[in-house]
Image 1 (spheres, rainbow, N blue to C red):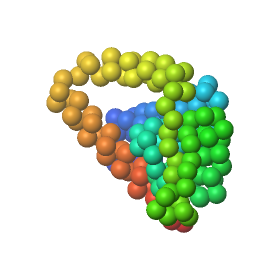
Image 2 (cartoon, rainbow, N blue to C red):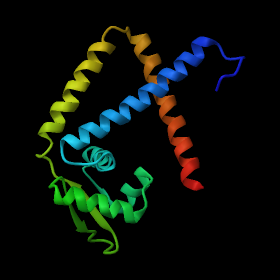
Image 3 (cartoon, rainbow, N blue to C red):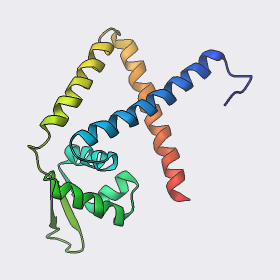
Image 4 (cartoon, helix red, strand yellow):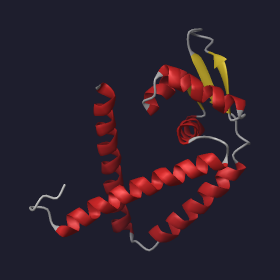
Length: 154
């Protein structure tokens, strides 16, 4: 990473991104633990909260987990009362996992406080700066997805 052709400012930004990623992972782990889940379960729950319902296979694809690992995640989420699973009426080989709202009060408090702080920080930027930040963030998401895909293909 220490390439002499890279400016100190570029290298500082790359380090800040790395630090942000690490702090995000630590926060996600602590948030999940506070509601009785591990980080992987918490991320799967987040996908399910967004989608409301999906197949176990699709959840495995979204997360990059194996079907065996996703079964264990769904088992834990179901035991904790966050989801229910049912056979797909159109294809009995598939399992549909549905998010059950109501148990996320503590998580809502945690993520609500985080969202409040992030919005407060971002409110200091003008619309043009916000659009640049959004584009930058979207490009980082794509970089992470592409690199995760490379890893999962090995």
